[in-house]
Image (tube, rainbow, N blue to C red; front, side, top):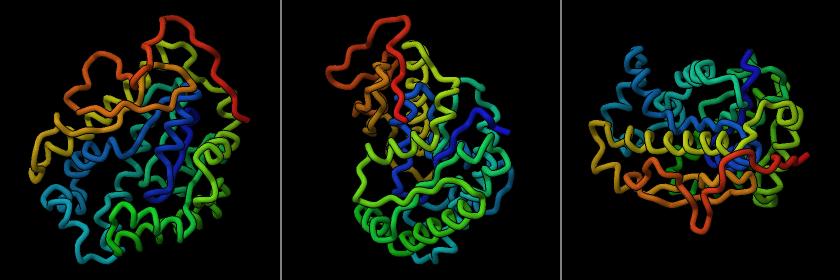
Length: 282
């Protein structure tokens, strides 16, 4: 059992990262974003000889998505191979504080055998109309949209079979409402923890999350087909002020992320020692 892990899964554009980061920051949890491990997982898949890994290494991104069926896209995604890798990552992490793991490769069937309780997993699936609109806004191709819609249906079926919580997402519910719903579902686990309590602990977790984003970008530009350099790439990083009520980001070039805390404009670094108690939301 992975008793120290909470799980948020769903298809692309379901809001997993936005929800997970708010909850992790508010409650002093370690945030694990599967996207930041994409290239580390690809390297592991290459070493292990997974057939779908070689196309990822040799084809430029645009080649992977053009003129392919949704089923072919699913095979190329490495989601099936990456699921067990995520479980391995969880086993390697410290047991405290709780880990909030989120990512598209997660499936209810995958996490069911390792759940402490069924209440440790939440699945976010947009309604079809909302899902299509979000994907189109991102510029997704039709085959990718169809694959994502099918993935949402698959997750919904598995969550029902496994007795795990599933929440429908649409534009009628703002992020604050969805965060509150997910927090309520995780309520008992968040109450019992363990959670980071001091400013130093929370800032360490935020720094760890930002370093993972840097590694993700650098991993991309280390691919043989990547064009350009990592340092000028601009990304949104989590503000490391450590205030549990902070949900601000700092937009920086990857090369500008140093050993100093990443702070959103106007956010002080704070003082050392215990910080205010973490707020409840249930």
